[in-house]
Image (cartoon, rainbow, N blue to C red):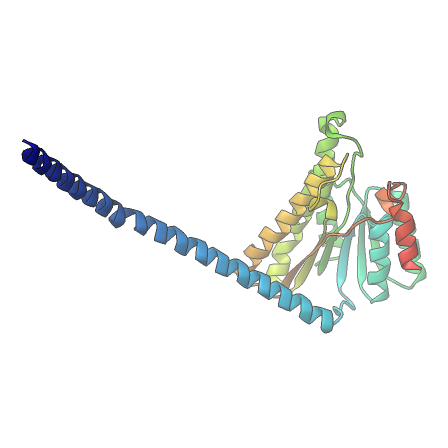
Length: 283
């Protein structure tokens, strides 16, 4: 019986081994296929990511050594929003120095007139329009007037912005809506209004002024940061759409400035005395 017991145990061991072999074979025939597929997909994604990183680094190094030539804008018609003060006014003056014709849009009539006065004193041509950019119907009405009065627009600088300056829970829905309408939706509305003509001519440039706050959140600026982040996403997505249309004469530029001591933030005080640091760096 001892011998039979040993034989029976051997038989069971053989059966167990055969069953294990079948089980392991079943795993070997299915699992590696899924794993290999996932690894291949991951490898492709890594290759694409590395390609984009290397491409961006090479392009940045190239532009660092060989600066891009200045864009020739003499005689071009440039539309700038938020031109009544701050960055918008400075951009208008700079474009004017380069021989561009300016279309100035701002809700501040007095500020816009002051910008117009400075441009005329410099011998520049400019056309002011007062508009509440948070009002879509009013904006489209001004767009129709511009097309009738001036005609085509070659460059759009979406620059106008506003902010509540309060924590989200202290901001009313109307205030948050206004921030998004001015900071994001007006950019989209203006681009939609003038982009078709640019595509037909295969000539034009849209410049969207976002903010570093759209990349890195800041305390007390939840609505502002979200609206600027939306501008970044809008610009990047629109770039892909233009590539599909193969209109290589129409360009997009996304600008994400940091702290600016003009306009909305001129009265802001940083805990690290950033304003003093910037003034020191400029001097």
